[in-house]
Length: 308
Picture 1 (cartoon, helix red, strand yellow):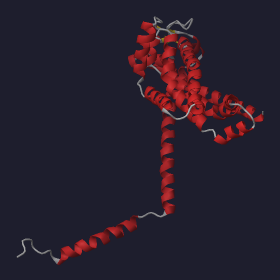
Picture 2: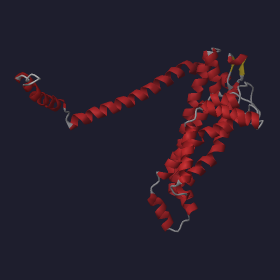
Picture 3: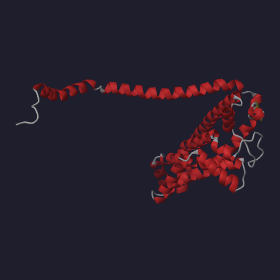
Picture 4: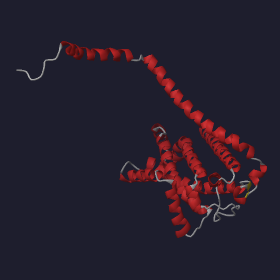
């Protein structure tokens, strides 16, 4: 005696024909290699064009609103009435001083650490600790760096709100970026370059300074440019360490206001949106010029080194 009823023939037919039906659908949905290649190109180009279009939209929108504000007086006059009047001369000088100080401090330590990791040591616990520390530092929010700089440089070392405190804090902040990008650029140099140099009787230092460094210079400079861009655009860490004084700085011990901080305060407080857009436009132009000039100088240096 059967407890469960016997399945009907129609159910058996459904059970038998369902896999075949799915197989037919799968075969019909399959795309030929030529069509899949075309589809992949369309998707990749669409993603690239979307990113480029978004970037152009942001730049054009800001420049269209800020370019009419920029004139000789805007560039040479200091801000007055909390930024409602005057120009941004003091913020330009403050931005250059803070960024230059940070880059001067970070270049020897960042590039030196990268060459140590890539050329002078083998993979081991020391290199793993250094890389882990650099990656951990790179993930720390900028406000934490600002709080560290405020407590250590401004208060503990009694440097006060100054360009020196801001530059040191920004140097700590961009150091991991310079280390990682420089190391990757050095490791990208083919090993055959080093082997040929050693076979010709060159020392380790001669190989690094005359072969590896010129070959990796473009990647190293790109990492430094990324650091410059982050320094120029930073606000939280700079407010807590360099301050937001509108007067013209006289030394690295003077407090200052950078262009990014000036733009942030003008836009957040609604003091003057026209001057805010003008400051943002000038920031974009400055970063673009820094990239163009730096790449031109690197390419010229590489061309001279190749001729020699």
